[in-house]
Image 1 (tube, rainbow, N blue to C red):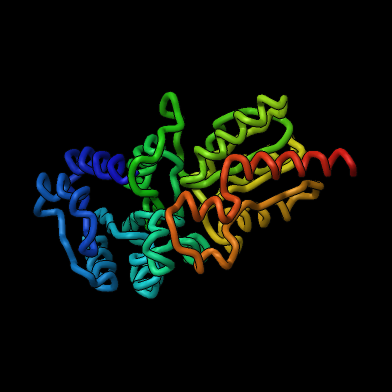
Image 2: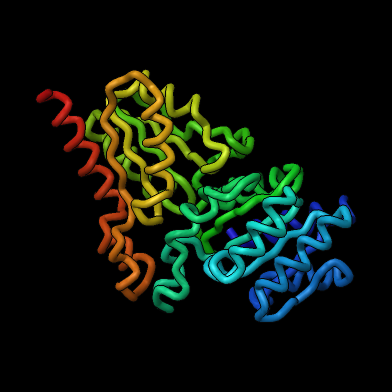
Length: 310
């Protein structure tokens, strides 16, 4: 995802001199292609994320479109006050790019986890919150946030994520993508869980269970119509996210569903509050938390069996 992001940013910077990129002393192997081509629009602020956000706000007040880049926990938790006061309340064109969303940096321990970021940031005013599901969505999302008027947060994985789409889908901030159609249940994924969610749908199809798969790449503004359609057309909804159960995708979908006078079963596959106590590879940590294609299959089958017994 990070490669798709920086390649797309370079393409955009070729056409728009307002684009700047700031880093908090990270990502040089990835960002050097931008730094080499656009040295006057690239700043390594150093390990000073609060200053980085203040500089980004100042540049944006001067008419620039400013991308800030760091490992996910650092440009959020270390400078939340600056994001809130300087960027969001002034509705500035600052685009926060967070590398390593979820448990990508699992071997570094909880200081490097980004498993509360969505909950924290979706509460802030004016801030669009995105997490693309594969490199193709990342390219499309990068273009979209560059055009979006106001601040954005985009949560990425790292590198080597599989491409899910055979061709580029239509992409719009706040509009979910229907990756697969089905009527038994709806699987809603956000960010790096998209591949496992598609794999789960394929495994269920082999058992004659056809499920709809939605890539809800934008948590805020959320696509109410896609969720309402899932409530109307399918028998159950499962959200899948690499985030704690509090405040992320599952909570946002539940809040949307609560406003409808319809009976619907919702299950949330997410990280327990104890996830931060574990250390290991992303794959290991996901498995420990039941975040896998097989885990999704099991939940869907249990839910559908429960509905038949109602």
